[in-house]
Every structure is written in structure tokens, then in C-alpha cells.
Image (cartoon, rainbow, N blue to C red):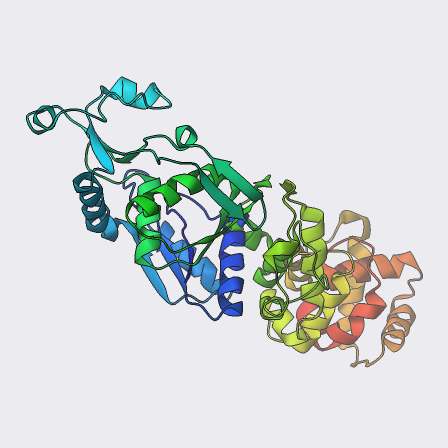
Amino acid sequence: MLRFAPSPTGDMYIGNLRFAIFNYLISKQNSEAFIVRIEDADKECNIKGKDQEILDILGLFGIEYQEVIYQSNNLRHHRAMALQLLHEKEAFNCFCRPKKLEDETPYDGTCENLPAELVIDNMNPFVIRIKKPKKSLHVSDIIMGESDYTPEEIDSFIILDKDKNSTQNFASAVDDMISDISMIIRDEAHRDNTPKQIAIRQALNYNKKIKYAHLPSISDDVSVKSLLEEGFLPEAIANYLICLNNTTPKEIFTLKEAQEWFSLESISYAPAQFDKERLCSINKEHLIVLDDKELSRYVGFADNDIGKIAKIYLKEVATLQELRAKIEPIFASKKVPDSFTKEAQTICDIFQKAPHFEKFDSFIAYLEKESKFEGDRLLKPLSFLLTGTEDEVDISKLYPYLKNYLEEIIK
């Protein structure tokens, strides 16, 4: 069993999406179940609707999961496990003042060996701490390598706070036990939490070995929503995240194709830098291979010819947002620049009486003959009437796909 464990406290960022994708790929390769665990235990920080937003994004990326679990629903299990540790003397009540709880690292053991009568009769607020392990713990990480942690480094850390809510390390360790997780793929920021979570499971006599892979954080991490709004395809974003700091057999691929060869062992432990230029390049390639009609739908149409026009513009743009900015002015109302208002009106008048021309050369020859305009005096206003912009565009390449829309465009 593998899991993706996001918190509903804000937008999903590409770093988190990367963990979801990698966990999903490994689950597919190993024929294991994949679950989503919404880590919503900190109620004050949760933002309404963010859990569903996370699930919707996973759906957009084609990431299938077998179950959604809300961590807050497991609180009774967390408390039961903490009581078990207290009963087995693997944990203890700590009555230290709040200032000391916050500031003192490592814990000095003040409350670890309190006599039973001082614990039972003590009416002061308390937290529950797990006893630090008696020997060092070894952690093997697929990406980061081997590490050893001494008991002092792991410490007697808090597992339940004064309100008897579980700390994140304790909740995660217990939840991973409950779900029988076999591998954890997450950010390197959680690397030092790993020995603590192993210590919790060992204290609870849970001896299953969980594999770990901690990925380098992505600098300049950006929200997935913002990239989608800019017009990056989910397929391209996933492609880019799999390529990041990784050796892949080819640069352009789908999530399904990646299942055949993806390997955590090929990922570098060097810091990961978000490269928008490379993402643009990958996005453009994914747009190019789209079916013409499908591409046209992304820019508001359902027509092969509009898709072909979009592909012409892909030589100079890379996102759907940029494509729409090219396509929309073609069909929008046009305010002709003062510099060629007269010429544009003349062309419009001539066009109203013109026959249909299959070929651009015949069309332009007819306009030249009827208007008596030559060179830029004809081409500049005509280009604006066809495209809605003064940008230099080879309208002869657009004409074969615009010719059936001319009555809608030139008016």
C-alpha cells in the first residue's frame, strides 16, 4: 500500500503533486493499492473545500486512488495507541510548563520517572511523550542513502498534546500502521521525522519494514492551479515533474508510458530547480500531438480547421493561454487602427460582393484588382481583418483554414 498525504491548508503545489505522481507510479508497478490520506487533524489551519480541490486535481492528472481517508477520523486510534504506550511504560505524562515544552530541545527527562502517585494526583495540564529509543536507529533511503540516528537525536518527543490531540509524527506513524503502508515517498523536509516515526512503530511492536524515498524540495515551488490557469496541460506538467532531476528514456511521454520504466533509483538527490522554460517546451510538444479537433476545444471551438490554425501559432507560443490570445482576436469585434481605416473599409466592402476562393492567391489577386491596393497597403489591413492584430503573420498559411469563416471574420 502506498499513500499520498496532503494537508487541506492551501493550494496544492507542484512539489506535492510530484509525490502523488511518484507514489501512484510505484503503486502501479508493484500492483499495490494507492490511497489518499487528507491530513486534516489541525482543524484551525484547514481551509474549507481544499480537500475536494486536491482530489479534483488528482482526477485531472489521471491519478487513480482506491480510498480517501481523513486523518481526523483516526484520532480515537491515535489516543488508543498512546494509552497502550503509557501502559507498557514506553511513554510518560509530562507536566512541564508550556514555555519549557516549546523551548527545550532535547527534552531533559524531568517527568520521565515521576512516581505513580505524583502522576495520578497531578491536576496540571500534561502532554504525553514517547520515551526515546534505547539504541540508534538506521534509516535506508532510496534517494538520500543511509543514515543513523542516536537516541539523543530522536529524543523523548511529544505524541499527544495537552488537548489530547496527536502530533503529526505520531498521527502519521499510526496511520501508516493502520493502512499497512509499504513505502513512503515524500519531501526531504520530512527526513528527520522518519526515525521518530520508526521509533513510534517499534515501541508499538510493529516490525514491518517500510521503504523510504525522500525527494529534494523544489525551489520556486508554484501552485498546480496557477499552472493550469496559465494553460499548461496536466499531461505536460506530469511529464515535466517526472523528468525533473531524473534520467528518462525519452523527454516526451504520458503517465501511462512512464509506468513501464519509472525508477526512483534514477532520481538525483541534488536540489531541484523549477524551470518554467523547460515546462513550456514540454507543454508545446504535448499540444502539438493533440488531435486537431481536441486542440480546438481547448481554445473554445470544436473544429479541425481551428485546431490546425492553433498548431500554426504553436511555433511562437507554448501554452493554451497564449494560444487563446492568438485565436480569440480572429473572431472578436475589431477596432481598425487609424493608419489604415480607409483601406480596411474598402476591403470589407469588396469582400461583401466577392465570390468564394479556395486558394489564397486567387483571393488576394481579386482584392488587388478590385481595390487597386498593392503591397503593404493591401496586406496590412487584410492581415488585421483576418487576425485581429498587427503582428506579422503569414496569412497565406492561415487562409486555407480561415476561408470558411471569412463572412464571420471580415465584417
